[in-house]
Length: 138
View (spheres, one colour):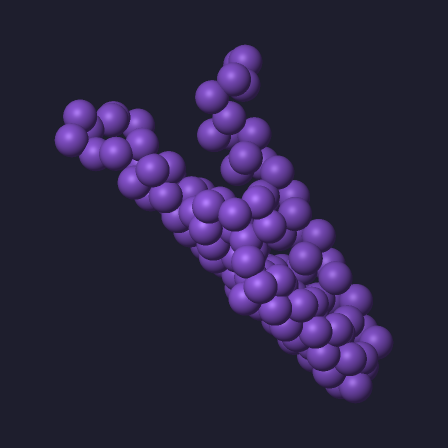
């Protein structure tokens, strides 16, 4: 990555983190979409393929919300980030629990598919993080 002299380090870090999130999200969604299409067309498991796709989408949304919350904590100037940050974090966990409950209401296979989509997301996140690590030795 080329550093522009007039850009501040904070701007460069924000751009790089957004670029990494876009890379992780696009690869996650592409992988989950491909696998869910295979599961749907080969095994005819509609709930499992729906869960895989929803797991990929929800994992990307969770990553974006974590980026927003951690950015507010880092740039707030207070060690704990203030009251609204903790409220948003509590709301995020409530939404995760609500989504899990909704997936179980569809079927257990839908929840298992979403967990598989989340596992795929974690693999992609680790791979992209390792690939973009500046201290990484080839």
